[in-house]
Structure formats: structure tokens, C-alpha cells
Length: 126
Figure (cartoon, rainbow, N blue to C red):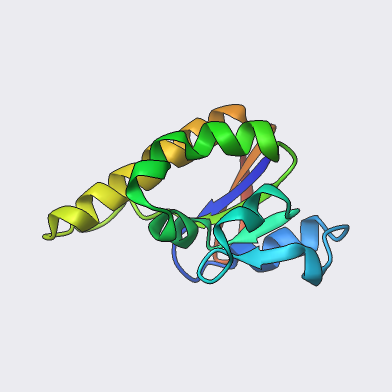
């Protein structure tokens, strides 16, 4: 498993595609619009944070464990959403916390974690 993280619009997907050319466009899915089960068979997912938003809240607790066991070779591309202003809405705060917890668990399992800022990747693990 590999994780590519960064702020919004920092070039994570472009960086991932450049560094993992073996994953062709058809093998990437978009977390904004994919089916819930697609993540367990794809090679790469962009907008992983949006995938988490679309998963039923009761399934989020087991998402990281299921992904580790069912698709351990996936490349995850996600925005970091835990920085900046704290959302006023309680549901948005809960979502933000869940994304952080899921990504933390997956980063611990990942062989490599890269943070991308302004299109430049900095390896923070691996």
C-alpha cells in the first residue's frame, strides 16, 4: 500500500500518476463517484477522502482493516482535511475526525507515504 496526501489542489494525483506509471488511467477510480466495492479491486483511488464521505458511517470503523486485508497493494490519493478551520457542523467535524483516523491507520500499514505540496512530493515514510 502507498499513500499520497496533500492539501486541496496540490497535485497529488499528477504526482502519483508520474511515479506509478504501471497504473494506467483505467485502473484509477475516483472516490467521489465510484461504487463502494470498487476500492477492493482497483489499483489506485483518487479523492479517497471523498470515498470515506460516501461510505455509510457505520461502515467507516472497519474500512481501514477491510482495505488492508482485501487490497493491500492499492495506491491511495487523498486530501488532508484535518488542517485549518474546525467545521461548525458536528457531522462535518465527525467526518473530518474519521478521515484522520482511517488515514492514520492506513499510513501505519503503508510501505510508503508521500506528502505533495505544489506538485513536489516529500517522502515521509518508506
